[in-house]
Length: 389
Image (tube, rainbow, N blue to C red; front, side, top):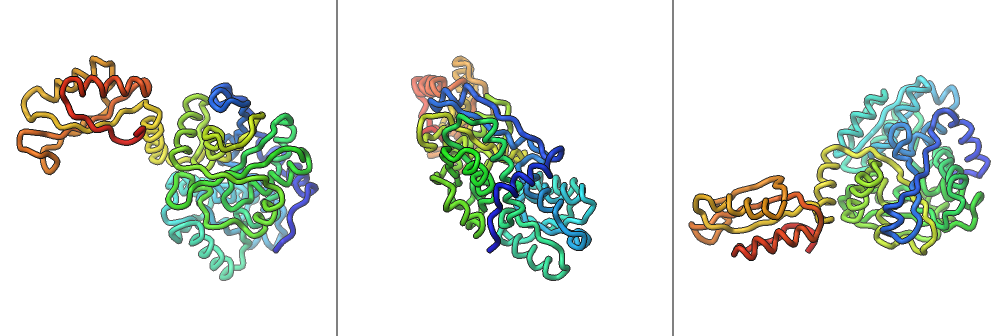
């Protein structure tokens, strides 16, 4: 196993990244501070070049390659963000980059990687499959693998965020960092342990299985990154996809910051009350590269969970004008119809009924309850679909 980078390595990476990686802003947010009962600061790495923190580690690694390594080109395996960063950094260095991505990688990330000049190969059902294909390719052509997190140079590059946080958020008692393979959290925590040794460092992971936080959905941490986290991180907490969706929607609506699922996990932990303590907390928003179709689904789920969308199913008499009566009741309560589905076959108990599914745009949860009460008072049996229960 390689040795962990030192604070000197992280400082050297910062000097190398000057004028390349942006020193991303730290925002204090009134909305999230009020909701969580503590001061919340957002480190906006979603505004970084290529849309995530990954440019730091990728550029630091590629810029320090030997002439022989540069001539052979670089290879990377990525769920999306690392691949974009490696492609961009390789293009800036004038060398070839081949990026292996999972077969189900979001197309927005695939196309972005190609736009930065990377040659994309889709291989494997997940990140681990892409890694296996990348390693095989490296063996066959002799190129240099730029690993997403299991590389001291990559970790040192990510650690420059920790140097910035130490300067921007000296009063933050806790720092929340997403953990997938562990390179980001390892780098930041190494820097903070040197610059702000009293700060509490909390890693945030997503639930296992299919998740919108694809950027941190890996089966295990890297050996090097894991060994660093074992001695630098105070706690690790888990958040659900529903909690990530809520945080993502709120961040976009209230702070006008678009973050991807993996980038929102720290904020989700704060809103769910899992960050610990009541003192100021700094949250790393690690990336903003979310696929448009995923964003639409997340927004619908988040709006439904917050009472901004009401989805319902009901049986109505199959006679002229009955659907109009239902819609008139919804309109009377100032509900705005988003969609209506009308089913006659296979969903009713008698030939004299038809099933209707409605999605209505609403103000809040109280407004949802008002609409449901009005429909039930009118004699309709109504089933609410989706959250809240």
